[in-house]
Length: 279
Ligand code: FE
Ligand code: FE
Ligand code: ZN
Image (cartoon, rainbow, N blue to C red; front, side):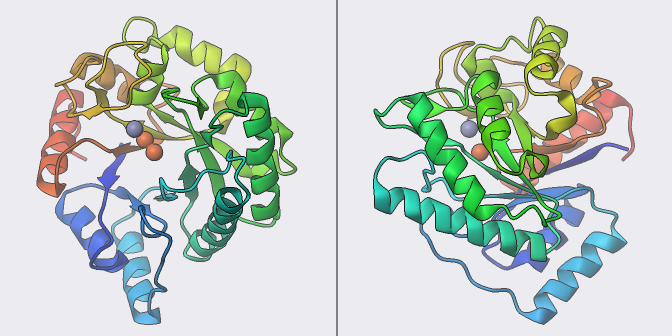
């Protein structure tokens, strides 16, 4: 069975988001772990959480994914910025684990001039404060485009973070198709080669989730602009090859394309039709 969903708004609560997933004929979702552009979060009521848990169980949702806010930068050399990011990753790992969310993804961060090695050291320090080793949740590093001073556009950098941490067994990878393509991994012409490289450097067993996006920007551009599936530089055939690939097809796929729930529902429907699947 295909596990696919989209990034969902939690503005009306987490139970409402699960209801919207069901309405979209999807079976998983990504949500923000807190306000993505600010720093706040609100605790869900017991009734809200119960309703959410019932919905995901009754409708056999696959692994859920929480996305940490974009505003945090664990790689930052600025003490207040780094400390804020440490607090967020620590709180949200615990909060999302308590909610039974399977994976929490974050952008490794930007080194803003201190260099990738120093940035990676800061990221590892933050992860080591957040991850106790007793969690059920996996904390995922997202593959990035490498815009500006961003860390994580090379598999080697993600490996350095993962293997440098005290609890690599709780750290996985989320592959974003738009980001790897813009970073210069040719998933259009050589998907097998890219997956082989991923396996050699990171190990495919650590790949836990796929962000399924087309890219407005060309191959190797190091620019991060998501496109609707089939309307970008990657194209529908290459994205379908990702979804159908034998080593990827059991993973959960999350759309982050510039569409609303209705648009995402249509993209999911189109993928299922092209795959000849009813669900
Ligand atoms: Fe992301
Ligand atoms: Fe993404
Ligand atoms: Zn992106």
